[in-house]
Amino acid sequence: MTDNSGDRVAIIGQGYVGLPVAIRAVEAGFDVLGFEVDRAKVVGLNSGRSHIDDITDDDVRRAIETGRFVASDDEAMLTGFDFAVITVPTPLREGAPDMRFIESAAMMVGPHVRPGSTVILESTTYPGTTEDFVAPILEEACG
Image (tube, rainbow, N blue to C red; front, top):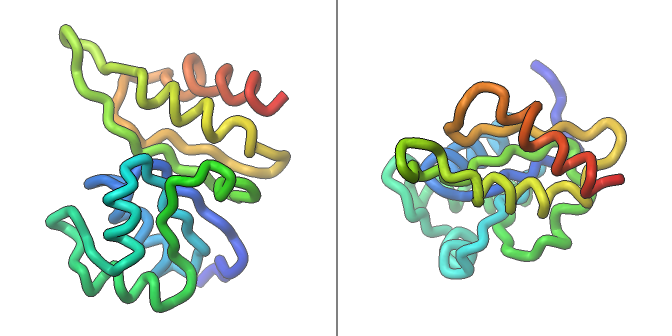
């Protein structure tokens, strides 16, 4: 088993994709920031309450009790991540994914990218989005 202690993961979006990824990352030994723009969800998560069916309140409480999970809406908390996983929604608009949430997340994560860090796009979208859409935003934002 790999020792993930000390590796910091930022999961951007704590919905039906992001929260399960965050909980699993804590179980795998990572330090996890569950970034969420919805303040009510942040407060609920930090109080041990889940807002999705696949993750129980007990799952969230166990993650918090490890000391390796915290939810936040403070962008400054993104500093120092080793891995960032973007799990924001991509609703369909006129048959195509709405890229506004991905763009916003990439612009937010970009200034915190540093040599050796990894950004993963886990949102549902078309092939090539990471290379053709997200990477240029990250490159511009991190210099």
